[in-house]
Image (tube, rainbow, N blue to C red; front, top):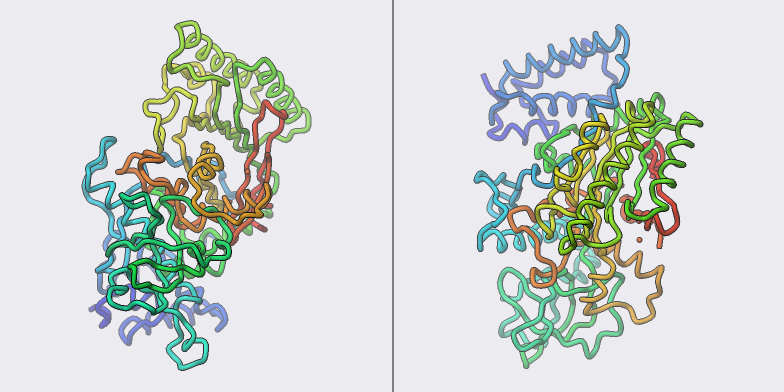
Length: 525
């Protein structure tokens, strides 16, 4: 016997069980004396558990539901007998960029589909096209879900004034009309700035634009432009702005989870939003002393670095302030050794050996702390373009043997810890964006540029929104640079935008400084 709904997600995710499924669900809720206010969250728990079953079919099976009911009841009994202590180790995941599965957006199905073929470092000509098309489609569906671009179904004055999103192919033969376009900023063969979408491109005329919106507009970024199509075949724009992104606050994340909750974009550490929210309360109460350290530009060849790290470790031990995670971001050397002499290579390895000995001299830290090494542009890795492979194993052999909990991560990498979703990237984004900017507010100051950088990166849902000729990426792994969904968590600065906390810890050597992030603080952002 099965649910009459053809799509089980329609039945479950909308909390609308049919006549066959509803009695079982109602019986479970009644037997456990679930209050009316908790019915919706209880049905969500049942739906999430059902989707996790290996034999969950496209039609809701009563047998599978029965097993879910029994599993939840057994779990509830175990919880009533006494809550098990939370084990932070089982909830900490350092996610390699090359382990993340590729999910392509399907316009036909209106959702993401997993790419079935194996990914390669070399990629294919088609993979670069798919990478750019995925970026466009992800941003476009975010725009169309935004309340400012999703017109109401009821007649209203706001709906009459709404400028609907159009395509470049709809401009032909309609000179004198106003249009709103979403597309990528690029230069034509003639060197003129255009906006390009999936259907074509049109040249932009900035003569009547007072100033662009907030953000850094670079070649390769996607923008919303509004203007009038002219007889000359150009778009005379009156406004240009960044596309809106899906905010990272709880309400928006819950809506995102209801749409794409069955997709695990990271590849591991999968938990539902409900599970994360339930655990986060206990984490704040039971594990309030858990903290993360983030250090950048830890130049091991600088004579000040190791003494500064030693002082930091001593303070941690003396004050029993041992951190759960310490992230050391490159560059781990002050100068590149890619074309250096043999002595430079030897010194590079000796510096890592000295660091291993220093960490191992603090048993309390070695037993408790996870160390994550993220290579920078000057560090030695297999490849030099994004995403970058971890540090070469030949240089970090002693670290692997002497430090118990060490992770050599890719650049970028992701860290999942309970409900904290952290993305770590080591790249000079500000310099690259400013070198290739085609539009920015003329009176923008240093603090404004920092906010504009954060806004641009998050609105573009991508860590490096530039064209391939500016920033080469591994096309098969371009999805590892996506900021979709948004993570929960640049001189030194911290900016919070749409619920996403972004910070730049600056050079560790330059100021012997670091930024630390606590689970409790980030949970309250």
